[in-house]
Length: 143
Image (cartoon, rainbow, N blue to C red; front, side, top):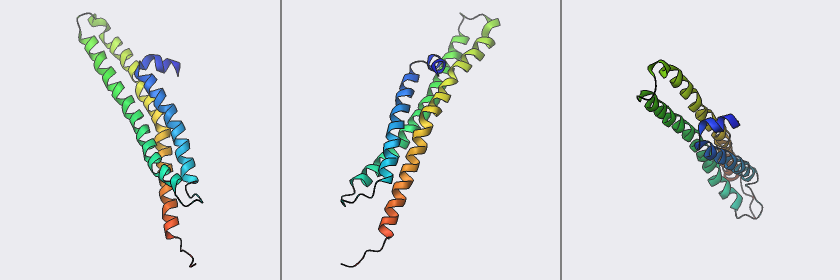
């Protein structure tokens, strides 16, 4: 993983922050989805779960998009460097292949950092909505 961070550049540290934050938020979102039917009747946990689940999923999606964007930006930078006069024509293909391989790690890091929060956020949202529907469909007993 350290090699990926070095090859991806400064964006990698942002991806690591997104991954760690998304991991903690996804655990909390799933916990709130499971414990959403609290006994006090206020439904505070359910409301937290309904907002935190999609928020975590969006955070995961942000990590994936950021990784893909960093790869695209890196490829553009490699093409600019290879097209300059400072590079010998004999080295162009070798440098392009090496540069593309290095910046390609950003996509992998984006998927690694955003995949789990995205999936867990969707699971938490589905759990919260299914528990909410089940609670609404449950018949109430007359007093």
